[in-house]
Length: 214
Image 1 (tube, one colour):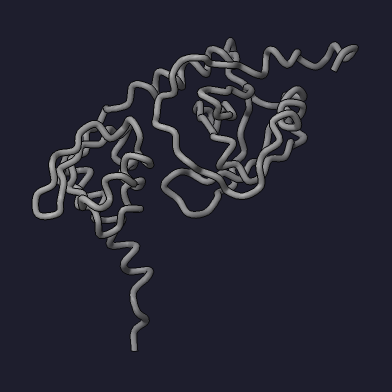
Image 2 (cartoon, one colour; image 1 turned 135 degrees about the horizontal axis):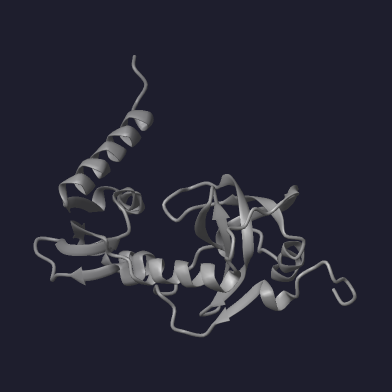
């Protein structure tokens, strides 16, 4: 706001990245649309925020307290760049269902700015692949997998007996959670730790959704 020297300029809080998007476009909305202008105005006060955010592999939002650096728009999509428990995170506004400023000032890492944190996140996101997960996917689910996984889906074989071999790039073993949404249309094969974690998650779901004991 002009004439308010204590508040940083919006140019320090909003970044436009004109490079190509790192994943294929996909629809992801959780209801009420976040007002970018209102959020940017709130960020100028440099306070901690409590947000409600749904991760891609989850059905409902979780509540998090974050220390925000600002907003980035890339390929027409808006993101909140913030630290969560001291770790840089990227939050798609399309999955943000609530945000409120707290009284405490934001705890930002020394020497870090919106641009430097965004550069850190961009490298981490655009260069995934520390783990390459191999799986079998039903042929009928391939188009949906392309929409959901985007550039993380790097290989799809020709179908044999209704199944395709696929390869998905993941940043960590826990990322196999995102494959649960394919239900009985997928079988994770390798690496062993990814298959074991996927099996554990599937067994937990089966246990919690099984028929009650008679």
